[in-house]
Image (cartoon, rainbow, N blue to C red):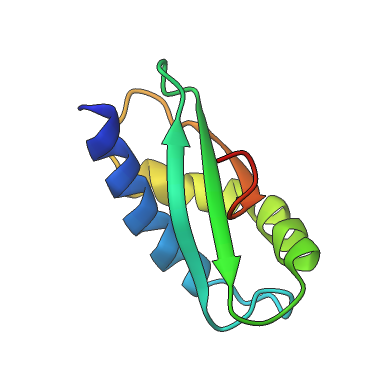
Length: 94
């Protein structure tokens, strides 16, 4: 798959998976703004934003749920190996 296709699939899967998290630090509406994968698909940088809530708490919650989110990606995106997920606030590192 092309990087753009992988990034689009990761965005879709992660948006659904994050919406299903039951962590009080995760607001009702979290938007996956962008996903950037490295050329070897070993790392995926996930940029998120939220309408309300504390961004640092949201990032901590997502980092804590990394294993669960990576399993969701592994189940729904056909790849040889699942990329390691890193979470950032939208606008960081663009």
